Image 1 (cartoon, rainbow, N blue to C red):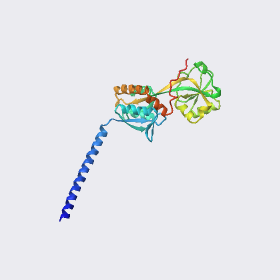
Image 2 (tube, rainbow, N blue to C red):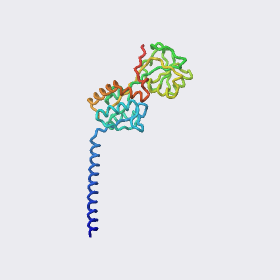
Image 3 (tube, rainbow, N blue to C red):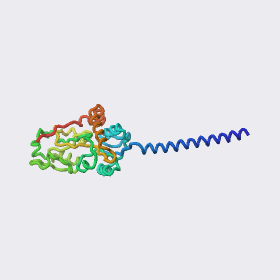
Image 4 (cartoon, rainbow, N blue to C red):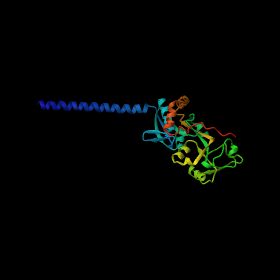
Length: 270
């Protein structure tokens, strides 16, 4: 009798505990879903290049690490998605995505999206063979030179100028081979990404960088006007300026191996 009563009591209490646990679990799940839906989740497209990519530890690269810190400081919860920039801009324009990264401003983006101040700026520089370098101070020093340039890239200072010869190549590799085989006198490279790649591969030992820039390309963040207000943009830009004037920016550049490459270059004079 005692044993049967104890068993019944045990089973009743076990059922009560199980019911309570199930109730808590269900309520917790509902709370989590509500909390997730109510949070400021911010979907950000990542192009997967040296400036912004997704690694095992999360966002990697100077651009996306900077943006991650700024968005979190604004109370946003970034959710990153790898996507080509062209597709990302379409998604941001229609409001499916919150932001795109490493974007070059254009007439299309300026009119339809909020564009941040430049997060990083790539200067176009002139590179020659180490034993074939020459003085570069003005555009006149480039006249008569065969300059390797990328197809599809714009060089406003050099295009359609008398005595200026731009020989277009499909890839950086083709352009570099043309220089190594002396089919051109110099090539136009990006001061950060191209030099970083050439240095990593040990090729920079054979090259010399002439100490002037012939153009620059700003990389900005593009935000959906449906999900990011003009006030948000102002706050983002102020936070960006503060971040880039702090030791955190220097530490970020050093960690990514870009401390000596991300510098202001003196523009060539006409």
